[in-house]
Length: 317
Image 1 (cartoon, one colour):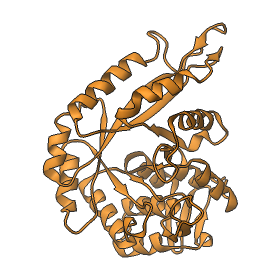
Image 2 (tube, one colour):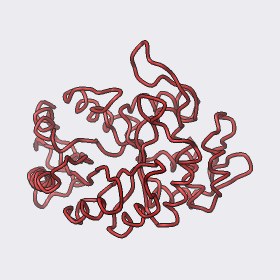
Image 3 (cartoon, helix red, strand yellow):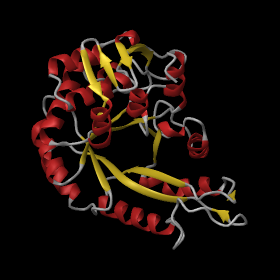
Image 4 (cartoon, one colour):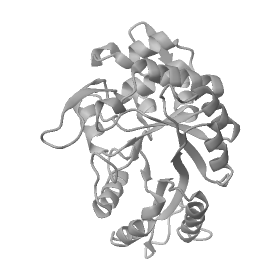
């Protein structure tokens, strides 16, 4: 793997196995995340998406995992969608984090004595919620402590004033969340709408995560669900989305960005040691790394194995 591709993919996927179309139960979701974070492709993995309403289920499933003996304490990073009662959910999160913090005096990176049985340190790092407008964003943000990074999912529909919503997100120090797909064709934003969203994010200085419909590396046709009779449609590719965002962070126009999002040929992408390219556009590793660190952050995916397998099928992994 070239360095440019690794930069684009590192810590990319927030695993959301509980959510459609996978919609797994808690036990396999927890087992999967535990296996992925120990596996050879753990560098692709970011957080586990765990709703506040299901934290007690999560703790019960976690208790069924075998404890690690004589190993480095493991960190579990979580992001939690909130319910309608923000104040109550935040209180649950703060209590949860206090109970699952690393043992006093032992940082997660410190190796304990060989005889020690290790329970992983777990932290809910961020919260996520939907907001229809700037007023809702400001009201919700006032109830969230600064120690929790907030993500606001805002609609790309014409009825929503994107610029004002993003300005409010910037004002409260939060981040945006954009839905890039779903279980039916109307849930997929157009390439032009996504390019416009990225452009507004760059202008307002707002970082974002994407969610849903990004199982393929490159744009193409795929079934909407895992059901045998599921309909198919054209879905965005996560390489298209995150490379486009990085290019726009570096100054690409909306018009060119929409064309890059529409690209369906894997051969149109070039991944080299010092940078990446799409057709006549080039970007260096420094610019890629800056965009991934501070602009285009992660994608929530109900599957980790599928994106990995699709990368392998293209010879990229």
